[in-house]
Amino acid sequence: MTEFDVIVIGAGPVGENAADYAHRSGLSVALVEGEKVGGECSYWACIPSKALLRTPNAVAAARRLAGVTATFDPKEVFARRDAFTGRGDDSGQAEWAASAGLTLVRGHARLAGERTVEVGDTTLTARHAVVVATGSVPVTPPIPGLSDVRSWGSREATSADAAPRRLGVLGGGVVACELGQAYQRLGSQVTMLVRDRLLAALEPVAGSRVADALRAEGVDVRIGAQLESVAAAGEAIALTVGGETIEVDELLVATGRRPRTADLGVDAVGLEPGKPLAIDDSGLVEGVPGGWLYAVGDVTGRAPLTHQGKYQARIAGAAITARAAGTALDTAPWGEHSATADHVAVPQVVFTDPEVAHVGRTASEAREAGIEVREVSLDIAVAGSSLHADGYEGTAVLVVDTAREVLVGATFVGQDVSELLHSATVAVVGEVPLARLWHAVPSFPTISEIWLRLLEAYRA
Image: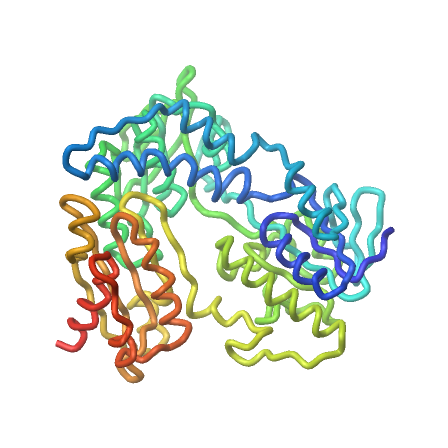
């Protein structure tokens, strides 16, 4: 069988969602994957990184309670990681695809024209839509000598079998912060080289609190550091920074990612390889006539997070189904076929210790968008937090549109604050007036009590 209603390129969580939603409506779907079914997230990103973080974070949390002594075995942490990734065995994911009614096609896919995809020597055609869900690839900066030595990307860091004695980390984003802290706790001496500040896309308090925590654990965090060159030094790697030479045993390059379109054949449909696939809010790729090419997830460059890509995939799957049936689409903001949250309500958790949980706009982003806002910031010091951990430290920030008195952004920094995020996301998406939020009573004694304190501070 080489003709399907829908062809989805990329069988990670995002592609799987797009394929599943299209198939549920009765469309036949081919799911094409050139590497592992389950994608980057399952084997080299979200899942293994969180597995490496979880045990050290839990032990650190336990130690914050009086009378508790806790330790862990790093070897068991790596073994637990392997239990989640299956060391790359994707047979279970492939079985899921078959049970969901999807036709799995293995091999590297390239667009070959309208509704046409080549996979090796096989040509597949789509009656209604082709969906690109190929994710992203790491960006390597042009630093002299870097290409001549071995280095880790996120894949190597999350699949390593042991912690190196000395680990250099280049970058200050989410991957750098999470894996830098994980490896420090797993036994490495970590040196982080950060050009600007940690977590620069988030509220400043997020990066400053995480930097303080990393330094308190012994991480050498160097803000404003410029890596000038890299060279081999026997079995080690020599980094030149500000005229100083730093030797490390492994170097993690965590300087961002770009959409994976360079080897996809997008030039066959008039698009530029290596660039993001710009889409409208229903997932249709702009600049391609005929209304058949969709893109979802990191490849679009819109909101490079697994959960946001799955959201886009659900929207695109519904849109493909409606168009195939000749049904009118609801593409108004917040409509069934409109990925509106991509623009104003993207939630994200950084699983460092302290955690960082953020949704919506930062105060600076809101002002750049022309919104008059007031920022309310408080230490998280409530009965629930004091019970949660001795000496609990954290910060909460609300960004309020003062004209409408609705929440447009929120940031929480502290132990276990990720559990506060969905309430903030609902408030942002629902544009819940602050006057109504007064009636959402936080349970006592929980960390959620901070919501009441923030509302009180806004009214003061």
